[in-house]
Image: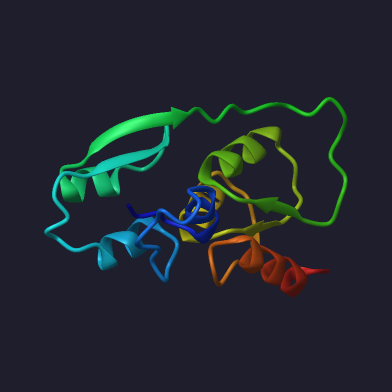
Length: 138
C-alpha cells in the first residue's frame, strides 16, 4: 500500500509501505515500482488522473469536495489553500487576499483562476504550509 503524504499514511495506522519524499502524484509515480501489479487509486472525485493514466490504475472516488460560500465577508492578511478545489472555490469569491499554497498543483489552479500566490510550501504537508505561511507574513 502507498500513500501520497504522511498524514494519509498515518491515517492507515502503519499499513502503508511507501510514502514518497515529494507528496504529489508525480512523487509517488517516481518512487512506485513499475512492477506494482494492479493499482487502485482512491481519492477525491475530481482528483487529477495522473496515476490512473500512467499506471492504467482503477479509480475509486472516496469523497467529493464541495465549495461553500461564507456568510460573512472574509477578513485577513492571507488565505491558506490546501487543494486545487479550494483554490478554485476561493477564486470564485472574488476576494483579493493573497494566498499561501500547499504545492505546485494548487498554485497552478490558484494562478489560473486569478489568485495571487504569495508563497508556496516547500513540502506539501502541514509543516510546509506553516513554514510558507510564516515566510509570507506581511
